[in-house]
Length: 394
Image (cartoon, rainbow, N blue to C red; front, side, top):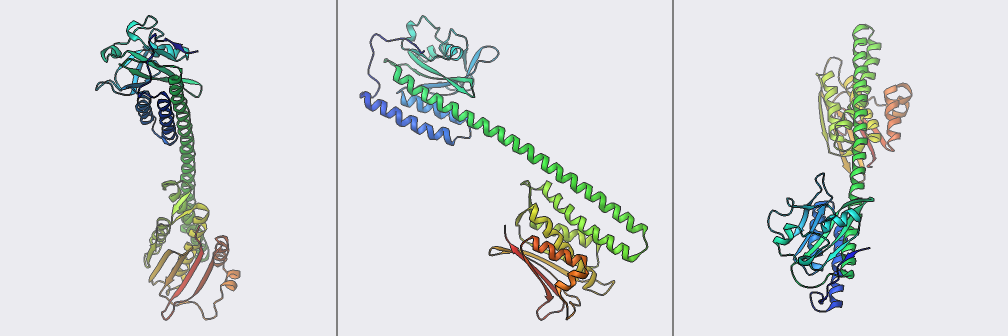
């Protein structure tokens, strides 16, 4: 039940016509409803609430007071009409002897139309300094907790009544709902950030584990004199590097689970170039973002194609250029790897080769996983081989 002091000489609402006055309040309340719905800044929302409340009540003064602190002081968090330095610094008593403190402690709104003769509450010094004669306040609650008090003050004659109280309560309700939403969003964002941190940490650990496996393969190759074994171990190491490179991009990326294709492909090219310094491996890739599910098989296909060019395009012991190009074309992504070497045999058949070669079999299988097609053949009018992979852009 509201604590109301009835004025013996009730005056008409500001603006003359009472109906127009109430309609204006409804329009202002509707306007604030949109503000509360869209707001992502609680402080800015509270400031706008005080401005619109004052406008709706035909008053110069309004303020929002925070919940009492350990010293039972309620700080002026937002406000309009007050002297410079009041908002954000001034505070009022939060005990039941002050109107705002009473509203906060009891949950009951307070209307006082004659502060100069008020016997129920003391008049705060700040309000006396501004010649405030009447005040109305309501409690703001959020998530079942008392958040603060919204108050409109006036230095003029007149009467705040039950209809004004309903207007104020509408503001308080909207503020409470907006605060609940913003706090829920903050908790959700914190949870998402925590999950992103876990995903990044997992990708980082996978990358480090794969780097350890790669180092073990290097040691094994150094300890084994069999060229065939070393070649197989080298192929395995290149594939592990491709997966590790993807996980490295995953944990470093701005968006969790998303890989920048230019960083991935050119990173793989640099890693392969370090292992084969006699070759000039050049990478031209657009900044296309892909999910890990797409980036990992694509990185493996790229590794296999470049590895094939390194091993077979040029005479043993010699090197030459190998060029990678990746671009979006229409609704598809195209990746090409070309060299200027000896070229493929005239009777080369990709399907038949996939039955004899693990690397080619992986290329065919991973291309199918991407939902794409791959062609391998001679470069038109020039020596060398061109491999072209095309798949639907995600």
